[in-house]
Image (tube, rainbow, N blue to C red; front, side, top):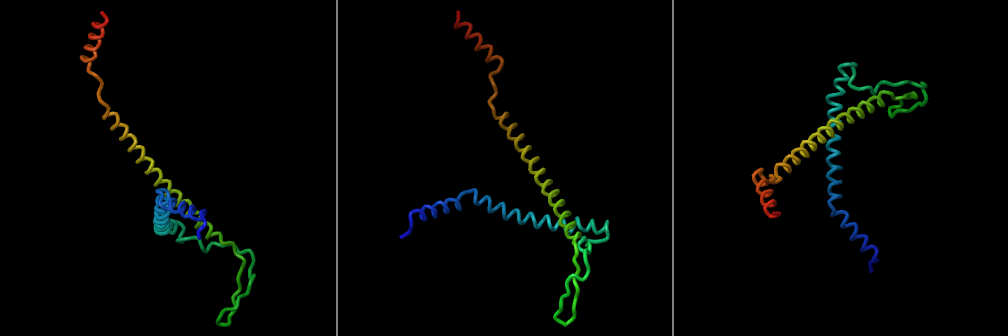
Length: 154
C-alpha cells in the first residue's frame, strides 16, 4: 500500500512538471545551448582568425612557461621513453579569457538589442492606448453643458 505522503509528492511533482515555468526553463536551457554553439563558432571561426591575422597564430595554446624540466619520465608502448616538464599553460588561459570576453560582448549585444525592442514595443503600446482613448467633449458640447447647468441653477 502506497504511503499517502508519496502520493502527495507525486501529485506535486506532476503539477511542477506541467507548470508553465518548467516548460519555459526547458526551452531556455535548450536555447542557451544553441546560443552557446553560435557564440563558440563566432569566437573560433571569426574572432580568433582575426587574432591569428594580428599575432600570427590562431590560438595561444602553445604559449607556456616551463617551471622545471624532466619532472616525469613516461614509457611509451613502443618502448621509448618521454620526459615531461612542469609547465604553466598560459596560452590555454588566454584562449579561455578571450572566449569569455567575446561571449560577454555577444550576449551584451543580444540583451541590448532585446531591451531596445522591448522599449519600442512599450512606446508603441502606449501610443496605441492614447489613440484608443475616446476624445473628450467638443467645445460646443462643453458650452452647452455649462449653459444648461446655469439655466438649472436659476
